[in-house]
Amino acid sequence: MQRGISFQKGLTYLDRRRRGMSVETYRRHSRTLSYPRGIVLDSDNKVHIPYTDFYLAFGCNLKCKSCSLLNPFRSGIVPKDKLIESFDKWSKRVVPATVALLGGEPFLNPDIAEIAAAAKNAFTQSLIAIITNGVLLPKVPDKILQSLGENGISVYISQHLNTDEFRQTLERGIERLEHYAINYELHDGYSKWAKLLATDTQNAPVPCSSNAEIAYENCFCCKYCTAIHGEHLYRCSLVANMVFAVKEGVLNSGWHRVLKHQPVTLESTPQEILHYLRGGAMAECSICPEKSELTEARQLTGEEVRVIKERIREEKRKAA
Ligand code: SF4
Ligand code: SF4
Image 1 (spheres, protein in one colour):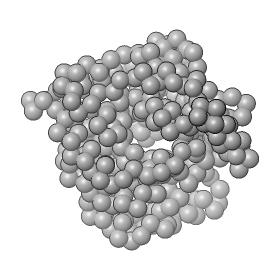
Image 2 (cartoon, rainbow, N blue to C red; image 1 turned 135 degrees about the vertical axis):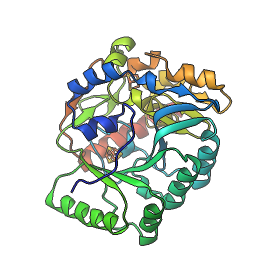
Image 3 (tube, rainbow, N blue to C red; image 1 turned 90 degrees about the vertical axis):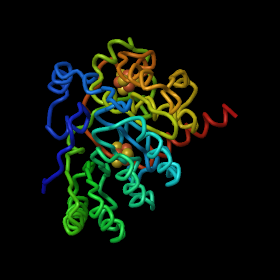
Image 4 (cartoon, rainbow, N blue to C red; image 1 turned 180 degrees about the horizontal axis):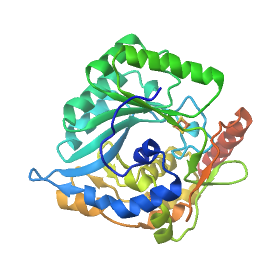
């Protein structure tokens, strides 16, 4: 079933998954390839970066136990106009090798075709890839898939379930991608999963008090994924999402230290962007475990989701 796109160079989580590396191998590899070398300033004063995320939705139709972006407890889509404005402005400042359109589940955003086309128009040198769990592919309207095919948008499916029913769903979705000549990759996201956040006995995320240098040294994923949201560019997609989740009230006061993080903005100079992206460990890395681990991927049960959501509501009541 695998065919596909070649995600461009950049030492990213996608690379690790594409190459099927173990965590340890990836860590060794990432030390030898040294990510900051991929970040350069060109003669137009644009900063070249290997990879960036744009979020189309914050909610998800799956409830993965170790979702590192907390999407099982978040909701909402990002408006098309806001994304298109962000593409136009940031494409004058940065040149990502890969622009990832993701969520949550990006196909929950009904304007995904227009958004992807706008990304393609703005980031003319980039590979544009939608990152999806694939569940909605059999139901996506034809006109959306047709547009993605015509605009050369790639689709990266991370398979988080391995039941017969789910495999059949994916097969139906992939048939449709092939029908519309959309390049795709299918990856195993179910046999093991990188657990990036520590959790308590109820599976709710808890911030660590790690040595930031050690956590950063052993970080093998998000430090290679920049994230752009509105006027801000974050050098770590996990920090970006923790900031959003604190502001949304999904994370409690124990996480407030991430709000100290200062992303670069559209007002920043190219040198400031370069300096920020090339930085090493940051104080916020102390929220992450010193050693991340692989865990068996599974869906949270309805009861587990209910318990965590009740805790979030309780925290919000206390904070009000
Ligand atoms: S499919 Fe992805 S975004 Fe959705 S819950 Fe699972 S890991 Fe999170
Ligand atoms: S906060 Fe630091 S250690 Fe944690 S994911 Fe981001 S870069 Fe890695």
